[in-house]
Length: 233
Length: 359
Image (cartoon, rainbow over all chains, first blue to last red):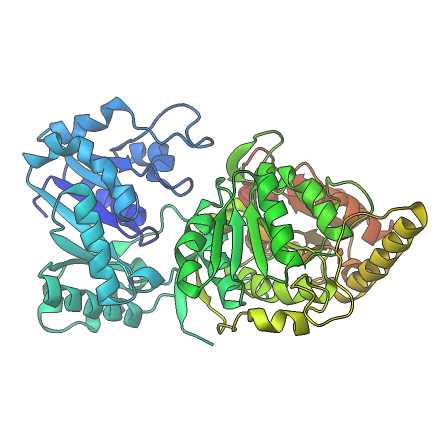
C-alpha cells in the first residue's frame, strides 16, 4: 500500500466508515502522518468524526465538519481545513465518503487537490446488503458512484459481513462475488476485510490468486458492544 | 422464511410493511427516520403501491385517515416533534375507528430536541396529546428482527380493532444495521376484496340498501357517550389481549431492571457486568407499553429488593412501573436525557450503589 490517498466509497451501509478507520490505523503503523477525512454529510449517526478524540491518541487526525453542535444537529457542510491533508504530499489521507452516488458527490469539490495525486478509489462491497446482492446491482452502484464523482473506481473492497454473526464462509462468498464483478467490469478485488477473530479461518479457506489479496483485519470501532447484546425475543 | 440480509433499521421497517401487504405510505422527512421515507418512495411504486410525500405532518395523518376510511392498509412515520404535530389526527382516527399503522423513530426533546436517540416520547405515545378519551396500542421492539416482525403483524392488529396502532423505536434502532430474516411477502388486499374484508369501509354503496358513514363526530351527548363506551369496550379487549413482556432471570434476581428498546440492549450488557460483581439481576422488557404488561411484575419473588427503570428520558415509564408494582418493591430510576446514551459501566456503577442500600 504505497499510495497516499485512498478514497473509500460504496453503497450506504456497506461499512465504509469501519473500513476507513481500520485502514487509517493500519497505515499509521507504517507511516507518521495519517489523516482521515470524513466527507459523509448524508448520515446522521455513526460518523467517523465522532472518533476524533480517540484517534488523536493514535496520532491520526480526523478532518470533517467541526461546527461545535454538528453531532446533534444536521449541518451538511464541511470545514475549510479538510483540504489540508490532501494538499500535503507527506500525509496519507483516507477519505471516508457518504453512501451511494449522492453521498459521494461531495468529492467533486476536492478534485483539484486529488487529481494530481496518486490515488486509489475503492468501492466497499457487502453482498449481504439487499441493494448490492447481485453482481448486476453492485455494478450499477459502482457506475452511479463513478457518474456522481467523475472518477473511475480502481479497486473493490470485499466487506461481506453480518456483524457478530459473520462466518469465514460469508467472507469467502463475498470474495467470490467481487471476483465475479471483476470478471465483468475489470475492477480488481484489492482488499478482503475480515473480523479480527476470523482472519486465520478465512486465510485457510483461500486458494490461488485470492491468497495474494491483502486481508484487512476489522476491529469494530464505530459500533459499541451494547448494540450487539443478544436479547431473548 | 427468506434468507438473512443486513439492513439498516429504517429500511427494514419499510420492507416489513411492504411484505405485510401495505401499499400506502404517507410521510414527511425528519431525522432520524429519513431513510424510511426514501425507501418507500423508491420501493413502494415497484410493488404497485402509492407513496405520498405530504406537505406537513398534519397532512400526513389526515391523508392516512382518508386511505384508512377507504379500506387501504397505510403506514405513516415520523420522529418525535413530527408525531406531536399529528396528535389531533390520532384522536380523530380513534373516534372514527380508522386503522392506521404509525411508526415513531424517536429522538430527544422537548421542543425541536436533537437528532440523537431518545425515549422521551413515552407520555406522548402512551397517553397521547390528542383530545378526548382514546387509546392507541404502543409496541416497543428492541431488536431489528423484533421490529420487523412487529410491523409485519401490526396491520392485522389495526384492522382487527379498527384502531390506529403505533410502534415506537428510538433513533438508534432506525439508524443501526443488523442482520434480519425478512418474512414472506403477503399479497396486498385487492381493491375488489375490500368490501368483503372491511364491510365498514367507504368503497361506494354498490347494491347495498344503505351507505356506510364514518365520522369523528356525534351530534348529541348521548350518542357521544355511547360511542366512547363502545370504544372503551374495545380498549378493554386490547388490555386483555395485547400486553407482552420478555422476562429474563427475574425469579432469582435481587435487582430487576425494566427497560425497552435500545435501553434494554444496554441493560443486557449491564447484567453481565453486575453478575461478575456478584449482583443477581433480572430484566422485564416490555414489548408493549400501552397496554402495559402489569402481569409481568407479579412474577417477581421475595428475593427481589428493588425495581429499577432504565430510560433515555427523565423517567416517564416509571409511573406505569409504580402502578404495576403496587408498592411491593421500591422503584428507582437510572437515566440520561438529551440524546445521551449512558454507558453500561455508568449504569452498573449507579446500580451497584443502589443495591448497596437495600442489601
